[in-house]
Image (cartoon, rainbow over the protein chains, first blue to last red):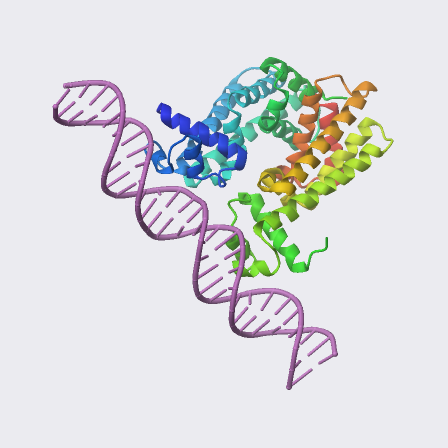
Length: 189
Length: 189
DNA sequence: ATTGCAAACTAACAGTTGTTAGTTAAGTGT
DNA sequence: ACACTTAACTAACAACTGTTAGTTTGCAAT
């Protein structure tokens, strides 16, 4: 799916606004004003407000899905797999925090098949993550704690990185990943 | 600030809807319909849609602030303090997950002095939390990792508990807290 | 020069939004 | 029986919503 330059621009501007105020609170006139054009002009490039949301959310969701599938198929250890997933979240956060905020906060405004598709991807993602942790526990690499608590604490941290990453952007991607791996896997005590 | 029964009911119904779709996407007619009355009737009890949001968000924010102030003043160890804060988040999540969702997702729709007040409370909260961690590091109870990464990973997990707690509500408050303390403090490896 | 096209514009639409005004029906206390 | 209060109602408002239709402008290719 290739986008024209102008369409990409609209999607990016919209993502920035959606991050600030949420999908519902941003109007087509807001998006237009941010681009110094009129609202009606947006429709030369996009079909609807919904389409913008779909373009933002689904693309990122598919990227998560694709990488997760690679990781699942690989022969790495559970710990190595988790590290790759941490890296994945950090990379996408650094590259496109606006879209990520949108995915986290506005996915419920998707409709019909898009909503269905998104929810399936998210459920599969969590299931795959769970399977990785479970294998790690079986093989003795991960402590035998409540598995849902483990999954949740890691995923919720990774998913909300976008809120926070500009507060500590002195850290490089690599340094951030290293610290995150230590904190999330080895604990702080 | 005492609320009449009916006002409380409106606030609770609104919080449920806000959790599902976000503040902006919920209309006064939605709230009214959920209570089997007409939108105009809501105004016998509340001043505005904004007032509902303020009642939901500020009350919870103040509760966090108050308990945090107690914890800061106490003579407990850093670890003990963190455990109490984990307990606080879990308790509020179990008691009022709707309001918590609202606080997390819709605080930016507060206006003027309410918005200012909220942001100040949140900043103070984070500063206090940071000071606790810092003390813990100084005293050797906590590993000397990047402090922002530590704060963020714990807080983001605690703050988004509401998304997740009904998936694993087999766990009691106590059991949940114990698992959470182990995972967040001691790590999983 | 003429045509074609991309991308902006103005004007307007039908529906939705939060909110107000004025009214009504059902209790409650005197 | 009476006035008062509570909490619902209908009707309407002005502003805002996403979107469409038709038009204009400037540039590139013929």
